[in-house]
Image (cartoon, rainbow, N blue to C red; front, side, top):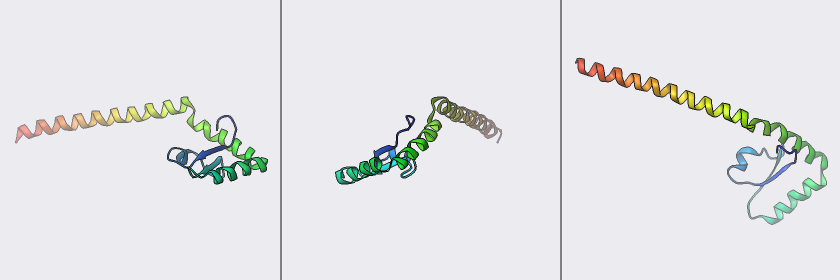
Amino acid sequence: MASGVAVLASAIEGFTQVVDPGKDGMLVPPRQPMMWTQAIEVLLNFPELRHAMGEAGVVKAKRYDWERVVDTILDVYNEARSRSRVNLVAAGVHAETSRLG
């Protein structure tokens, strides 16, 4: 995607979550050589489609840029740490109040 080339991939988990068929690439069922052949022919015979998919792929690939991914992961870790602290405080309060009764 990042290289500006239309993606032709097997329609398996992982690829189906990233490739938007007809927009930035094509997904083909696994173990279907005739369908793979047809998909390759489409990409070869329709250069406008192929180039449009490549351009859309470049745009999508920017969402997976390492700087962006790192920031997202850090946000998740910070949120988890924050929630963990709240749970520890709540557990401590609960332990204290149970001794009062």
